Length: 289
Image 1 (tube, helix red, strand yellow):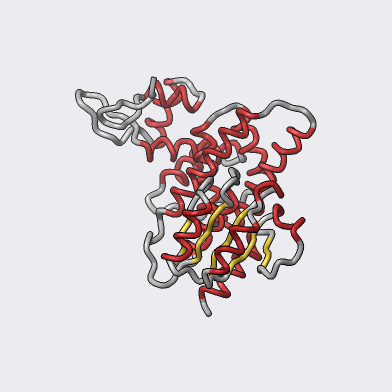
Image 2 (cartoon, one colour):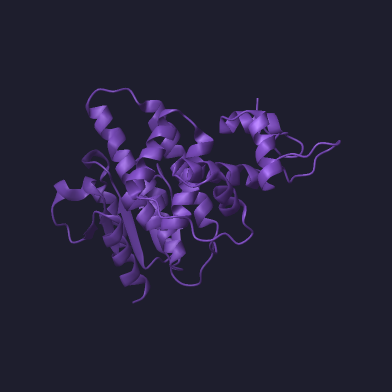
């Protein structure tokens, strides 16, 4: 059952305590001592915790786990104009995400991702934290460990977190867009989602097609959207669609190939990038031309 009240969209204290892994007594104590009780109105005499309250409580717990006294952590997490969060090493963020994903604590994963994106930005969050976590899961697969559930939980939440982050910027920016597309058979889209958020943060017009989009649709949109650059992503050789890249180029569009899936094809006359920084440089080059 959803821990939130469906009608009000607010959390009952008992469910908040269960989510945080503390007793209801501890939750009431925090409310009395630090003034961080429920803020959402509900029918009847009882108040409920809003989604924002829960996120702040989770943030407070992370600060305490990192060594901050409880009173100071409560003040930092619930301040109207919070000061900048204490610096957290990337390696610690990686461990926290790995642990939360392994235990399938989706709410904790989401909170950690939002904090990481908000603190580091979408590019550094990907390069320094998220990609290392995903590589660690890949290494576990190579060793024969079964970690599909953790990978599914993490990749789903990363995609949602980047979507939430991108919504903080205008959806329609004037100008010809950079068109980001996965090759039609490509299922791994997170690097393109990180690039999309990074372009949105930079104020560069961007259109993102997502995964498993048919080649016909990619070509049609490349023709109709008039992008300054079409960047085609492939993780592994079986998904690299050289025919699609050539077709889009024949439409008069500039095509870039992104990801390790293209390396086996050699130089086909396309700009090639294989990390977020170089993809961003290429996109900016054409967006500002």
